[in-house]
Image 1: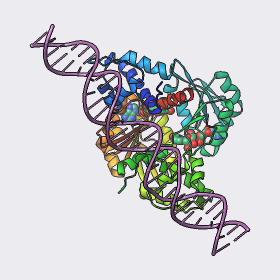
Image 2 (image 1 turned 90 degrees about the vertical axis):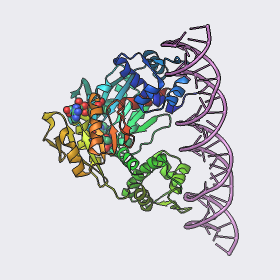
Image 3 (image 1 turned 180 degrees about the vertical axis):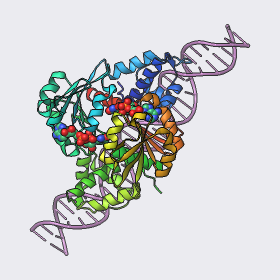
Image 4 (image 1 turned 135 degrees about the horizontal axis):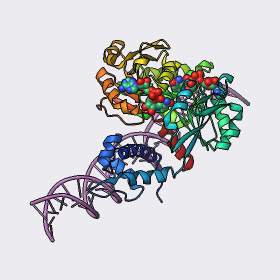
Length: 205
Length: 205
DNA sequence: AATCAATCGTGAAATTCGTAACGATTTATA
DNA sequence: TATAAATCGTTACGAATTTCACGATTGATT
Ligand SMILES: NC(=O)c1ccc[n+]([C@@H]2O[C@H](COP(=O)([O-])OP(=O)(O)OC[C@H]3O[C@@H](n4cnc5c(N)ncnc54)[C@H](O)[C@@H]3O)[C@@H](O)[C@H]2O)c1
Ligand SMILES: NC(=O)c1ccc[n+]([C@@H]2O[C@H](COP(=O)([O-])OP(=O)(O)OC[C@H]3O[C@@H](n4cnc5c(N)ncnc54)[C@H](O)[C@@H]3O)[C@@H](O)[C@H]2O)c1
């Protein structure tokens, strides 16, 4: 049995997003080369990725948009809804609470926590903000799987520890420092400054 | 002459960030394995990366924190200051304008643009918000190199086109769709939803 | 001074990944 | 129905990346 690679999965998520947009435009067929143009990948790469899922396309025609999307989604997401817990309702946290992309049929932000009394018991976009002390209890109740760190870097490790204790299995960390967690927990760091510097170095070298 | 790989550069940016933090703690020496623990990399990977820059460490001792940071920075950033222009001052754009990480000695957000009349001529964190029509003119004046797309997905391509015309060389795109630009322009897409789904799939598979 | 332990640097092996080449399949059409 | 054109799927190849293995260097210790 062949195993799917992480890179293929991440690209497949891009394909899914593109396929959703195509469906909105009532495009019911798509070729690998068109999908490549849209996603910035290559046609061969796309066919190779898709081949993992079996023979999905038909020669001379391409892929059926809906069917391809369903196949990718079924494999990667399996009808799951991802539940998110947010830690830190400051400037970034507030934007995230208001983000419509986190209130869809696939992803739902279901809990928000902050340390500051002043932020508590407010409600943003229908989500109440709770004190961090209640996070373990509430996260278990709502079955959140993924946590977002949007607290200052000095508090990110402390919050990460709480997240692990609360049973979250994955973390997205916006604080500009590394956190250490058990290796069963998956962490993705997104550091805006590093992204900018990386892009800049791209444009230079 | 060997050329440095993109992956090495991106990891080096992580090393630099870690080294800066170590310097704040007055740690003047660091070994590859300690740096590996902090950054989540491996000690061999780190030595291999650093070896591109020559013989920097000393056996039995490790690396001199400041010297290593300087070497990495000098190579990758060369005393440059990166100037950023922001497009779209909504929920996310406002958070970005207030982000201290974009007002440092290496990175400066220098211009912000929005389409909506209501956002204009306000000032956030010392940065005035201008109408998009003035972007080409102002971006050239302040010599911005990198642009941030924080407008709704329906407007991202339109904004990308303006960015290219304005002379920006790199783009970070937070809108959840792909944009097409000349291939001399480097684009980095950051799609929060895809990141979440990717993390989720990690925790599942 | 000799020895030991820690750490670096690096060439080689192993792995992962992307690309290219090409046969197979399907539809359109003469 | 035979041919042509488009597109898929797959194998083989090559490039890039990581990991391994180990020699070289240094500082500490006896
Ligand atoms: N503002 C941005 O656009 C931006 C961009 C990239 C990264 N970041 C990073 O994201 C994080 C948040 O940024 P921000 O601008 O929203 O900061 P902020 O200061 O506006 O908000 C931080 C929030 O975290 C809360 N907090 C502090 N310690 C806490 C703890 N232990 N538990 C729970 N909540 C706690 C604070 O009460 C506050 O509400 C920071 O690490 C920042 O570096 C921010
Ligand atoms: N809010 C979040 O946390 C978040 C997270 C991830 C991604 N995003 C994405 O980032 C983008 C911005 O999100 P947001 O929540 O700030 O949206 P928003 O609606 O709050 O703000 C969008 C802003 O863009 C401006 N705008 C619209 N068209 C424009 C144009 N052609 N030129 C210049 N300005 C224009 C609007 O006037 C508005 O101020 C969206 O694409 C969103 O999907 C947002």
